[in-house]
Length: 216
Image (cartoon, rainbow, N blue to C red):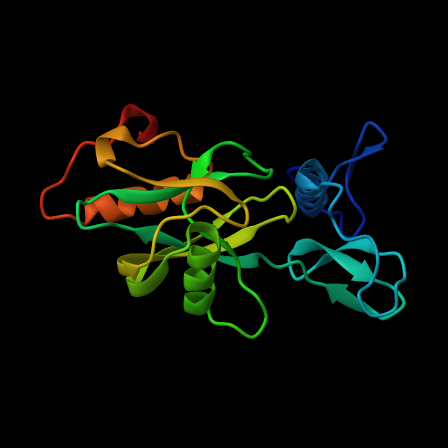
């Protein structure tokens, strides 16, 4: 009989009078530890529906927030956002410098959260207009990924390629600056998800180019 086995009575087996820890108990403790490690101050504490305090319970194979009054789990899902990889006729990439945290002062792709009532494509071109002053037309989807956030546990990020646009580049909204960069002169990018989309775009070119060392 190995650790995790139970006696015929269904009780945990003992060694020297100490109950042996069963496998499911180990898994649960491990999962709880991981959850507590990743929890932030932004983790929801009260029920959306009745405002009662929430508690943690194992549900559907995961530790979830649970409302004992409503008797339902409160699901925490990634918040959707959209961004654009904008390329001009010289092959340069459009980036914006963040005016606000997180990553204030660093460069990233134009983008932001998707509003209720709009599609990801509409959100992408809206954010492009707000942050750079450009009216863009989406060429195709580049990719979708999830990324940890500072305000939310996770963000679902959708990226689109834009090669046709009009207007003049003027930084606005959350952007302190906006500019086109040649591939060889790209600055450090604020978010890993944006780095990934940039790599995906350049990997699809007919003539692959070498990315700077900071994109390894």
